[in-house]
Image (tube, rainbow, N blue to C red; front, side, top):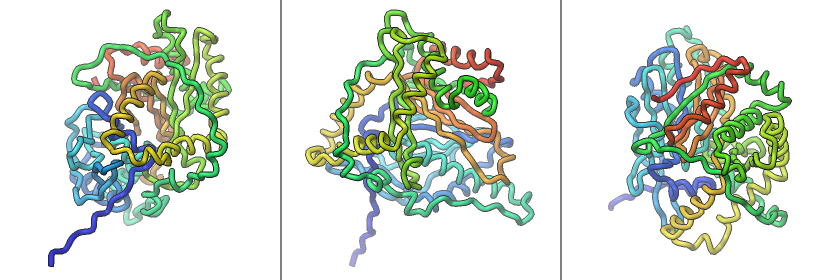
Length: 422
């Protein structure tokens, strides 16, 4: 009698559903986390480390399949292969109707790159994966130096917890009664530029001291994230044509929901808030921008507001009519909605936060950085020890916004180390 292997599959979480429908060559929905070491990478050891890491992240063995009504993950028997870096930054990973894994690991000299299709995980989940990967790599690479005292990685959660759909787990239908009416949204200022050939991304990174940036932030009586968000608004304004200053600059800022709910998931679990500033109606001084941004952060990051954001996020999925719409029609609707939303937001800034590894292996690591596919200049940032890396990705040749941003920091007396993929 012929036996059949049981197929293991999982639904996409709520935040993931839009990415397969809207990914294209101009915006691949791929992001990269890079670890820079102090010595060149050994690809054979990196492959061994990747194999070990996958044992505790089984969802990373998934391929994306198309169902009648929704996309879904199917656990595969595919094995990822570590390769020398040979593709442009954030090149496509998900190819429609092609059975491939949704991430890749590459290396170049001292750098290890993890690139992920956003449907698989958000930045916080991916950080957890690369922390584990780098731990295994360095333990295998440096095992002779530990004299038998091999450090242990403190796993934060079980495999089942990592695979949780935390949107469903923390969603409460009774909260729907408090759902506010949708605010009237206006068109935002859109950054224009000369696109690079072949949909390539320009990456410009600035490395600074975390403590020095914190000092400047505290001079303005604010946090590092609010200070850099305000500086980004100011830098966009300085490049803004005079006849466009009646449009507000609106930044989308991701919110890591794990900070507000009981969640150890390695999948997507985030919301967003919009930070808006109209320079025609308000002062262009950085001090005044910071005051406004500080108020927006304070209003949006209460538990009540976070609960409402979660309910809004889940409302479409719980709509009976939306559930029965066939997937091809959903693709069309989501692409259309994404284009409309593109007019409502100027760009985004995302702080992945502090990346950490066991103390015993920190001396082998120089820095971490994060970059993302972009339809307009975007900022992503993260820190490791005292090293903060601010990454601008942009599809445009022009770099005036980036120059204004880093020159401001340099003029404040900060030492900024600039690098680029050009």
